[in-house]
Amino acid sequence: MVEAWDIGQVAIAGVLSLVIGYGGGMVGDSGSPLFIALLVFMCDMKQSTANGTVLAMMLGPMTFLGCVVMKDRIKVLIQPIAFGVAGYSIMTYFGVRLNTHGQRLRAFTTLLS
Image (cartoon, rainbow, N blue to C red; front, side):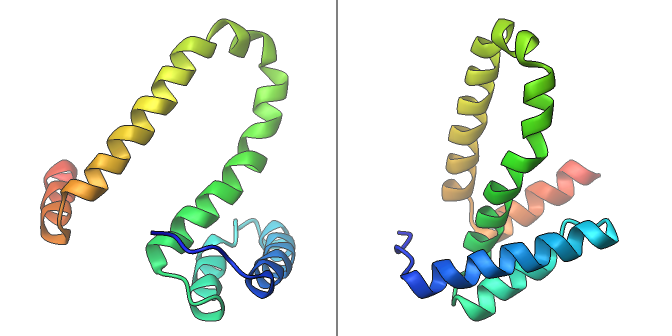
């Protein structure tokens, strides 16, 4: 179960996102590895939760301009997009919940080979 953040953690994450986003933009890096580490250590967050938080934070800025430019195409493809996002989200949830660490590692190495 994910716990709600207190105002201090929200403030820390907000400041970190500004600083790391600026620094990442300056060097051409997304800054996500540093942001994940700081969320884990400064906000006492589990690494998997920090990974998901950073990914969710990055998806909006990374896809916004593409959605604006392709808005007419997106209107035509909204149904397959919705089904794809929903199916991916549901299967990712079950994939994480149903596998233990060893099974995930074996599945990943099998996929790579």
